[in-house]
Length: 261
Image (spheres, one colour):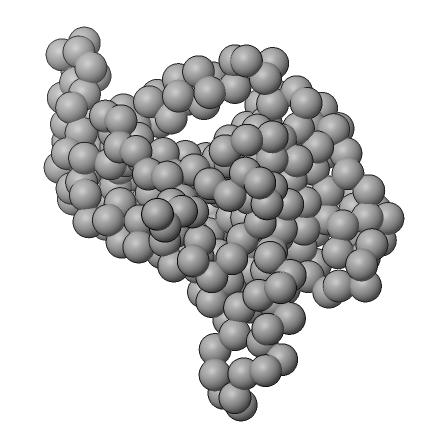
């Protein structure tokens, strides 16, 4: 029987995507990348799914890439897509996904696992989770954001500390650094993430998508250009059904019912 390398569950408005190679500490392989890409196709098509939660099965969130498959790229023909090409494409898609993405970091998270968590909009971690880069420990160079993106998410000195030392830090330390937004006791992580995801799912999907697009792009813009981008997006949003519904609900003192348009 073929192993399901990723488990998928739609529970109300939340899509739960769970890495499922627990014996390999959920190391990312090509099958996992293909499955994740396929589930993102489904989630993007379904209007009823408004938030994505990514987690890991077992004691690890993700210990990084399956190095056997990374090294296999050396035997490919020139121009043939290798593991890193596929990983970059899927990670970039997750990072830019129009729906909110939450990483539920349940355990060991390092190297490619850290890079996967960084693709999420919000990182929530269990108290026992450890998070680090670890590429330097094995003379490996990061290929999915550790050197390029991590310094945009946490202070530069902390990013370089993680990159150079190869150490893993606690969830509490990463909370202090700003990478992690919430830390919960291990036994409460799933329920806390569910509560957060369902709360976000109540918001206007089109408003959240537009906020995400502007916020994600702002790091590459001057403040003036970022403000202009926000104003352009606002002009588009003023014509949305969700804005009108939100204003009516406020006036009528009721909970809005957003349709995502």
